[in-house]
Length: 302
Image (cartoon, rainbow, N blue to C red):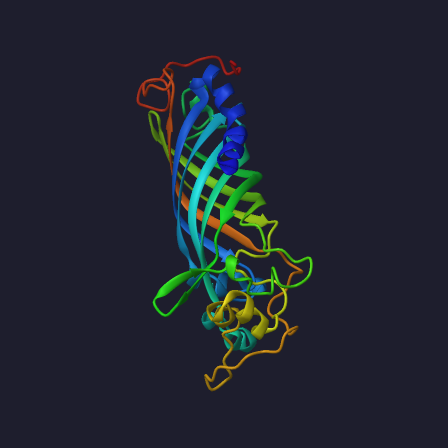
């Protein structure tokens, strides 16, 4: 309930302004892939080579309000599935640690966009080479609020990891279990092309620098495995330490030995195709990028 209220509050200013500026409002559909960078799987310094094997699905919807031909604000809702596996890492230490996870992501975001070229078709001006063509590049930044739920696969089932206290959370003094919601800073870039009339097609890539180190349930050190088993059960102890040696034999690490690193928080990002349609009564094809145009003054009308 609290997450839903937060998302509504984020989007309320955009929806309020949009009521009076429908001619500049677009509905945007997004679909593509998600990627994660953290303590499980590849090396964070080699994101492109080590993490692309863990790509997952991503999809979302958004509203974009063009304040001017060069600036827009946007509210999005995204769903994604991220994952990581030490078995795919090129690092021996991570392979022997042998952890893996997946986590669904539900994200609401608020973004500012800056166009690098004059995107004039939304102002009702004819699209041609001298007044901003059909193609446009843009950069964006903002923040998001998201929920996540790391899970591990064991004996044919997926298990939620946060309740199991795999690093001694709930056992160590003054160490509660981590929250399953967090915030992130967003940065990215995109390209769009006017198809004609109300429609434009594009691609965009955006990365999220989160304020949590537990997207993957891994952050600090191992806790005493016997205490985990006594507190949360044998399953918790098994999923907390799945170490294998170079010959594939299982073993248990002593409490206090390194499990992850809390120095760098986790990241995730999306690479998506976008399809936008202009809303409002002024978004007809004869005025906005179609074969016939109604040319207006080049000055902006608000």
